[in-house]
Image (cartoon, rainbow, N blue to C red; front, side):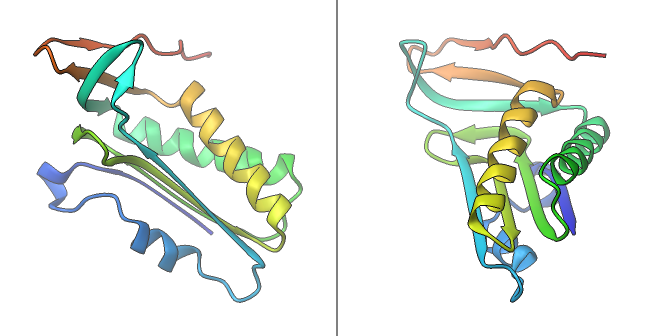
Amino acid sequence: MFHAAIIDPKKTKKIISLLRAEKFIKDFDAGASIFFVGNIRKNNNNKNVTGVTYDAFDRLVIKTFKKIYTEGIKKFKLKKAKVFIEHAKGYVPLGKPSIIIAVSCKHRSEAYQLSRYLIEQIKMRAPIWKKEYYKNQKSEWLKGTAIKI
């Protein structure tokens, strides 16, 4: 089972949610649940960050998340796993979450492997761009990873 969404609070009036993630992956046949929460950190490349704006090609991001999920299930030979992925779009202030990945699997090793695979692949392949804002009132779009076609 799989859920993926790009959450833009200006459009949906909601934010990414650990509670939604927990409800989605709950499975009494699963022995492990893993939650990864990516937060906006205070310092990046020796610059004091106050927040980040994310932009995304929503449909392609969801398609990419689904492809990465399918590849992970196949790679780790998982028969049953639940995955929840939500990524923020728009401005996210310091300390707040920008992405949540939740995974439930029969065994902890499977959950850890799949969770790590998902975040690493998303960072490399998803068409999501970020602009950092700094304490000195400056901002810049960060260099991303080129999408491989």
